[in-house]
Structures are given as C-alpha cells and as structure tokens.
Image (cartoon, rainbow, N blue to C red; front, side, top):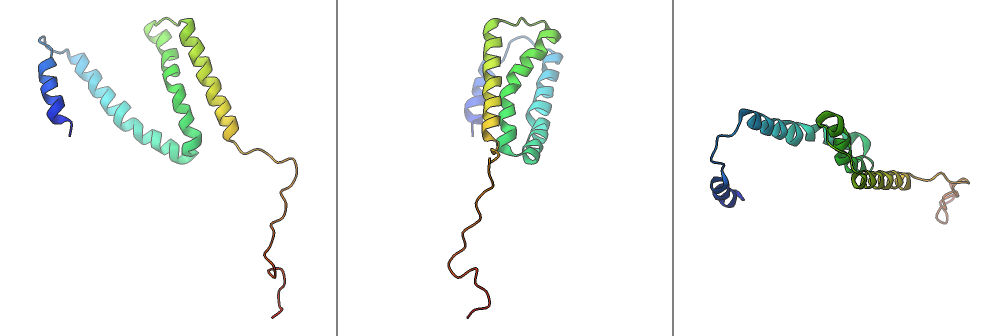
Length: 123
C-alpha cells in the first residue's frame, strides 16, 4: 500500500554515485537475519518462556548492542548512556519480580462448596 508513495521518493533520493557492494551486502544481511530469520527465534522464545515474561528482555537489547559496540567498534561510553542503561535494567528487574506470583505465608483456604454438594447418596 505504501509503494505508490515510497517508490517516487526512493527514485528522487537515490544517490548519484554507485552504492558499494559492502553496503548492499550489509543491507541484505540486516534484512535476512535481523528482520526475518531472527523473528523465528524470537517468537519461538516467546512461545517457550511466555510472552509476558520474555518480552521484557527486549528492553535490554539496545543496551546490550551498545556494550558490544564498545570493544567491537571502539564506540565511547558516556555517563548518560550508562545511567539510562542502569535505569532500564532496574525497571526490567523490578517488573520481572513483580510479575512472579508471591508465595503465600499460609495455606490457601479450602474451596467453599455449594450447599448440598458435600452430601452424597441422599435423594
């Protein structure tokens, strides 16, 4: 549905110089692995662990990417990024702890049966 809008914009903004092969390979890699094959693993993980529990770990993905980019690409780590990362990790941890069922200090009361349900054999 978006093709009538995006195709003219793509042609108008197409670069004048040739696009490097490495750029096309990077585009194909991101399109195949991150946007297509990765979804199979993600949805399988959601099915195995439960959507409510597993989906919170997705909040950590940008910060894990930043941590990997520091030694891999030589990216700097500033105080603001570190502060937000700690805040998001703390929020995820608190959310996971609050979503887990709490252990009751005492046994749950017995179920109340409707009148006459406990009587058997009487007509």
